[in-house]
Length: 380
Image 1 (cartoon, rainbow, N blue to C red):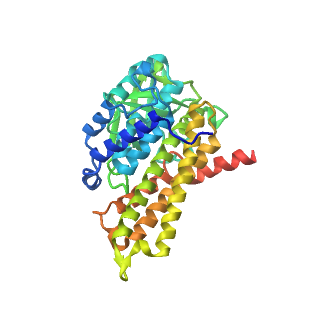
Image 2: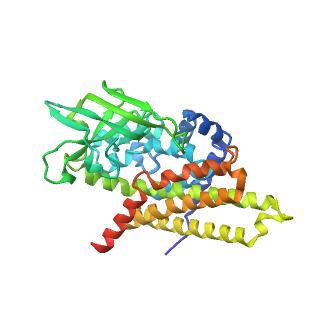
Image 3: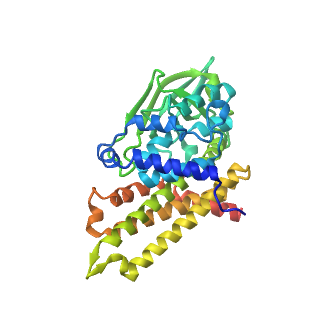
């Protein structure tokens, strides 16, 4: 076993760290307060090859794996979770096209994702269908040579920005299997009847666009079906087994940032005539955080490596996602506690990390659902 990154991977990591440090740091507070994002940063990231690195070279990508994508995500989130999410989520959905899309769909969309001409989104969650995706009722009905789609989606990343939206639709409501009723259909956002409304007031990752989507009598060609009709649930699970690796890297990046903030503050802040860092209680907290982070990183490194090697382990992915998200929340909490009252003021990065962390235990599979996956893999 080799735990050392290759020279090329170290170069990607270093370039991502430098880019994020230069482009994110000074803008993070303003974007968070104003719930906005400067698309020019995304464009620069695309120009430098950070977006969609796992996309094959024939479609304009770098042809790396999800491991390299995760290395970039960790560095971006260590700099700022909100901007990191806004930049890299531009490719959220391209994984589905890579796995199940037609050659025509790949040639149309993937080069635009890599070049910064377009963002993509994936519309799954509904007001009454979250963890239970099989309860989704947004319906797509075949009429002649078209799909007619009606319904609504909630909490959709890139909802107001994406040029293409992959919509999880009910296409076979009479199927006796709940896992055989849905399909993915690609909907261009300029299609008549498509409406996206930006959501405001999120607790964290406020630079990242999140929207509610309304689909009213949407008409798209039958060939916009992604994958096979009725296989949407299984395709979604395969999709999540890749994208959850990205969440792991996000979590480790955030936890690392929390640790860095805690070390910086406790080495300079003095109480009772000495620095906070000189107290054993603080040292124990720092030691625990560092250990949690190393353990979480090793988990997602192995899960990502196995995925790229064609040995995907869905239970390992679930372990990595649940554990890394948990340690991100813990590390943010401990770091804020070590800041005391200062941690409660918005000019300090640690309070933003605290707010940003919680989403990691919720999106793309709640911590409870990840535990279900792990348990079922063990219990049959």
